[in-house]
Image (cartoon, rainbow, N blue to C red):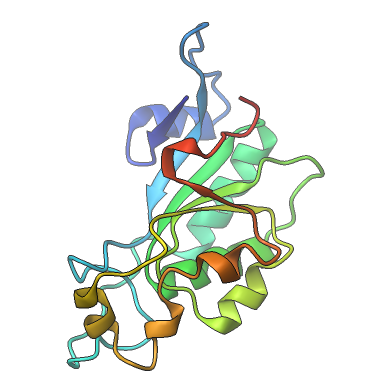
Length: 178
């Protein structure tokens, strides 16, 4: 299963409706885009500054672009995979899903990462067509210190995400239609 990076010409072809090359060994599932960076690299998009006051990284895509991609992929039976690590990026996925009408049977959005999920976003994600592919249940001490005590309970919300939101571990997460 292959997701084309949104920056590649092949992704633009998919969005325009050009049929992907599929063999018995490879199936193009859709496109993938990174909405922010990592917590460890301090390039994740956060809703407030890091604990030491350093500013958060900005989101890499805007809501309108994500909604456009989602509608186009839905129209072609393909899936959108978004890497969203920080709470601002995860909230962006929730906003776009809540505001974008989708056809019945559309593929769920794959949200990779989802390492920092606030309670308001968690509630907004419940019932949305999303599968969260989350990492370890425990956050390293450096990440706990970097996000600060007010957000440390939001890190790696595996148990909370599982409450009404499908989750899977990394590469073992099934792809839609596979």
